[in-house]
Image (cartoon, rainbow, N blue to C red):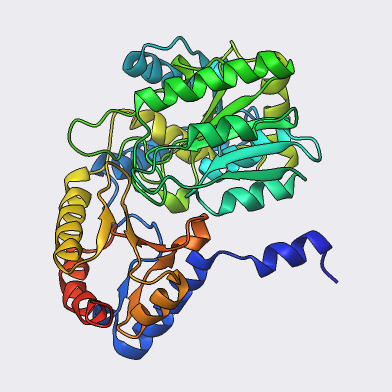
Length: 394
């Protein structure tokens, strides 16, 4: 018999993954070209050529015993130093290798953070709509996820509700910008206001409240949009980053945590996070990929590909009468459903082989998420099917 905790987690298993598996089934039945699978945020842009070149060079030139062996649980010191130096150059920070822990992607970074910080009953606040796995991650360490209801005007956080829901039990606050599922970037004004609230509440409750910034989409922004680097606004910030999207390496599971020296109990937090990496079973981030990302520190994917997809999809859907939040970053479009029952709308879309994810999976019913990190042809060919779907409602 599996554990009681896992019974609940299995029942609440990811709707996104379920839709992805359904897409594979439909592709076999109707042909992949006739299925419009917008379910999973799986990059459709190849990694930069420099990544492949780095892999080949590292494998050929490095001592295989060193390359494939263990290292510090926090990762290679020189890789961490390279990342710290890059952040300092880009954002005017003052990090060193002692502020970086290499992780098995952003998900690993969040799990390491919650394992490090949470006691049973501690509260973690997040802003809807939010990535659904946050709830599972928090439950895994016997924490309580506290949701702030969505602001469907512009999807910036509801700061009045946020302030009201902070308690003595609040240990962490998660922000995700650019946001999954909306593509919204939290403004500098929002970050300053949020930080001010946290500073006030720390003093009021005489506690430490850690702001956890989940940043796998930081590099995927359009036009002149800027993503504030949050450690510059709030001292008790921990940043989780992933190369899954910026280098199109989701299957390689490589990322890092930034734990600034200025946070409360820095020495204990950094030490505990290093130990958590080991006892959670990650042991250390993949050695080869650590070397690769260090060599490719200034590389990014071609965001113009996603921008074209975004523009074509947004323009096409709005012309059909759908209401959409135009993304500033990431590669998701958040669309309001013409019926209150978003799951019923998802089921209706499936009749046309359109696979999308209900907003209720992100704590925001009445919307759907459309992942446009797909082939451009998929976007174009899906629009006539969306038109057929629209005729059911308009």
